[in-house]
Each structure stands twice: as structure tokens, then as C-alpha cells.
Amino acid sequence: MSDLESVKKLRSTTGAGFKDCNSALKEASGDLEKAIEILRIKGISKASKKMSREAKEGVVIIFGDEKKTSIIEINCETDFVAKNDDFLNFTKEIGELNNSVSSDLDKLNKSKMRNGSTVSQNLIDLIAKIGEKITIGRLKTIENSKSKIFTYNHSIVKDNLSKLGVVVSLEFENRSKDIEQFGKQISMHIAASNPMVIDTKDIKDDVIQKEKEIIKEELKNLGKPQEIIEKISLGKINKFKEDNSLLTQDWVMDPELKVKDVLTKVNSKNLMIKDFIRIKIGE
Image (cartoon, rainbow, N blue to C red; front, side, top):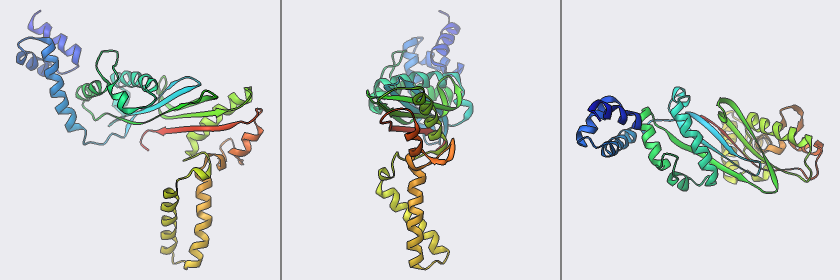
């Protein structure tokens, strides 16, 4: 194999530039495998410098079936890279692997991809090749043998890759057309309304306490007396709980109804929303 052919092969294998490949081959005395390792080491160095930058773009991928589905966010710095085929292909494979390890990040990083390298190593290589910070963000798996899982992708980039993804698990006694319709609608509702929890009782105390402090500070700045502040704060906190809990939110399809009202109208016994996750890039 000529020097030029070796450089071409190394470029094809690693995605690195001509000069870097030529330099690595000279350092490795023409040994392709050794040259690949040299470029990886250099790639790690390049990747480390990039990791201090912000990565607020990217895509969300949902993968699974009606009993077990996972969602994961892969971030990058620019929307241009979020549409890059290398980035999207990497993300697609990560989505499948993530479901197989039930969103265990440590296991995911150590998982082998189709090329034989781990997710961690492929991530480093992709950073070196593309030239942007790329990170694995939020991830979750919803699994319930007694329920059916529904999903929704908003602002689709390609296939099941999007800018916003929702996974929701419904439990019920009898399947009907109403269930299928409600499953799609509640997924869209969650995408639009961004609830924190299913029920008001599920909101963590520290979240409520922080909101109370913000409300009281705002009212104090308006010059309200203490007794009025306490009274108004109570009403505002109750409204905060209702607005951020799925069951008490106004139904996006009909704001005259609450989500909990719609549940009673669906033609299925003991219908319950068991779990959900919503991930939007940039939030």
C-alpha cells in the first residue's frame, strides 16, 4: 500500500484530516493500527479542550415498545451538527443501547457499539472528528408490564430523532379506541404543558419552599403588608401546584376541562397515568 493510499484509508477509518493522518502514519512508521491509536490519543486531547464549552443543541431519541421505552438526549453546540449524519447515526445507535441497559449511564458508557468500541470511546472520536462538544444528557426508561407506553416526537429532525420527546405510561383494564386516542393526546398535552409531576402531592417540598420564597420576595418588593403576603402566597402556591401537576392542568384540547376530568370520560376501566418523562433540547 502506497503512502497516499495509507493516508486515505486512515482518513476513511478515523475521519481525521489529511495532515493529522499523514503525521500519525509517519510517527507510527506506517502501521495503520498504531496510527489510529495515535489519532485517538490526540483526539482525547482535542476533546478535553472542547468539553468546557456549552452544548445546548442536539436531539432527543425515543426507542422501545409498548412495555418498555427509553428516552435519551444527546447534546452538541450547534444546530448544524445536530443535523450531521455522523452525529445522527451515533445518536440512533445510542438510543437502542440505552433501552437495553435501562438508562444506566455507567453501563451505557461501557457498552460496545457496532464498530467494537465502547460508547465512551466513540463519543471521544466523534468530538475529535466533528470539532464540537458532544455530551450525553438526560435519560430515563419507563417499564411496566401492566401498562401501555405512548410516545410523541415534536420538531422531528429525522425518523425518531427530535427536539422534544415525550414518553407516557398508561394503565387500564380494557383496551379501546378511546385509549389509543387518549394516549396520543396526553402525550401531546405533556409536550405542550410541561408538567413537573402527575399529582400535586408529588411535588417535592424543596421545590414548593423555593417557590414560596420567590413569591414572598416579589410581594414584599411591591410593598404588601405581611398579613396580605401570607394570604396571597397561599393562593399563589396552590395555583403553582395545579399548573405544574398533570392531573390538575387545563386540558390542552379543551381548557374548560382538567386532565383528571378527561380521564373519567375515556371508555376504559381504572385508567391511570402511571409515569411520564418529557425532554426538550435547550431546557
